[in-house]
Image 1 (cartoon, rainbow, N blue to C red):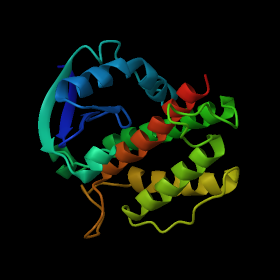
Image 2 (spheres, rainbow, N blue to C red):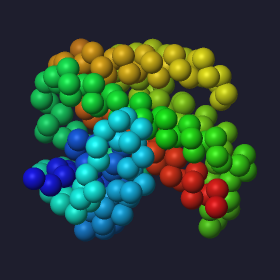
Image 3 (cartoon, helix red, strand yellow):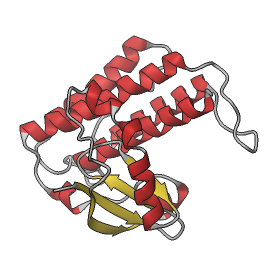
Length: 216
């Protein structure tokens, strides 16, 4: 049946997001470029389902099926997936919630491995920019606390290296995702659970892959 993908089309950037594989999302200037980038990152994404104990088909990138096109926003053009898919309005079964949260947890596992292997000082970008390792970790932790508010959670940001506090924040997010059954939290400004899982995992992996690239 192929891999269901939706496209989020902004004025300057398009995201291609795998609907059922949180974190597998890439962007490009055009729809074709975004789909090509998504396919190219399949092998980089593979360690995530492996860490979750899930089978990731070898043909996952060969049969990308666009099931929905959504209008992007300023956030899309800035560089983050922002659109909510139609499927995000569907109720979650226990099995789907477990699968979703398992992949988010696995994205953290992969991120922690990358952090453990990375040098403190990362190679700078072409214009001399880019965060070093600990600054990037701090940024990811801060984003996750902000994202958690969209799930109705009020959490303090852990310090880099405070494994106990980091574990507690992640456990709170996972607990909310695992218990999710309705499409969205009981909040006017909340994110749909499926979108929240994809956004959290995408942000974690986007920086994990950046860290890998800038460690070389």
